[in-house]
Image (cartoon, rainbow, N blue to C red):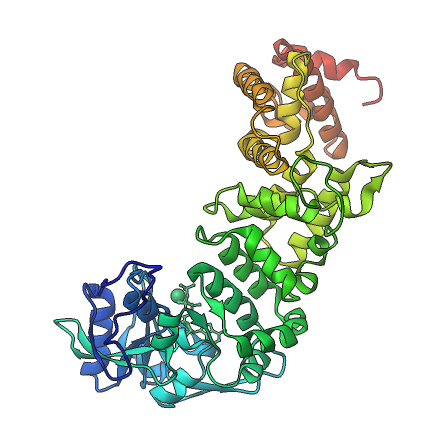
Length: 467
Ligand code: ATP
Ligand code: MG
């Protein structure tokens, strides 16, 4: 029930504790029906984790996690349209809101600190809650009267009290918990920032000790956690990565960013190139986490290019470093390309003296679909430099001039002829030579769009000396 605003000063209602009755209102039909199906088939089933945490603090749950005594095979039989992630026994129901069903389990033997070696099913709810990461995520709700959304809270680790006193505390021994799964290091920081909670001192001390083990995390898990961090509108990147740095996580996971610490930025606002990078990411929208990463990485080339007070070519070096980072974290190709294009392009300097052809070449270099991204990055970069809006006069003019050129062809596929025409009409053999000719024709058309006519282009191609 949404009793309290969140983040609230007082946290969950005073009466809430282990064994207290609690009504979820409204309990959406999807988790209600899933609970009913399991219980009617004779299996114990509860709601657990983030959804209960978010309900009792008044935030309201968005996803619903069910835990059940039924083994995974029984769950997938009861929900034939579900998707079964075999190894971890998590069954995801189709549709939204997201409903996931996980069989009670206890995990053992995290040899590589990535994934449990063995997952034992058939354990009890107590066992299941005991293997969860933080006390605030280890509270369950056992349904009584499903129709009314009434049930009982199960909180053996004092998670409700920790919600009230606003702390992130590991379940059980923190050294053991971080030793089992290094992702919990990053989750602790994220939850602490998202809710504005402190990390409990013993948990934080263990986190610091275990920070180097973040190096053993799989790239995919780091990537997903990074996206959740910068994609969370309630978390400020400047605070988040400063915290990563202070806890010893940044140098392990993103050493390229750590290297910006102490590098002068020569901008109006205080701080070094790392501070500036974090402010830039922060000035970009959380709804576009990959764009925020471009902001984070845009000056990453500055660590190695400082000479005579200037950072010669830092955008080129930076694009290479950013590409390496993005590939290491196994980002999809389109994200790698997007970030490197933005890093490479972020130093553009518009002058009113640019010819229309120069404007078209700029569009061609950046790519039509990257222009808005690049402007957003530039504006964030200026804001993060303390330059504010003064440069935006020029930006507005450039935008207007780009709009004037909207119809001009800027990509080879917009040319009035293609590679087949060149082969057919000029009798050229297929191969890379065709691409080179098209690129040169594109240059000619960028200079003068009126050349974009079939006969003109074929004539130009014929005249090319070394085709
Ligand atoms: P969010 O609101 O970010 O989804 P959440 O707490 O729901 O927060 P999930 O990643 O969806 O986080 O995980 C659901 C639950 O599974 C958690 O509340 C926690 O009980 C458990 N959990 C998730 N990841 C871990 C982990 N690495 N170690 C232990 N328990 C975990
Ligand atoms: Mg969740």
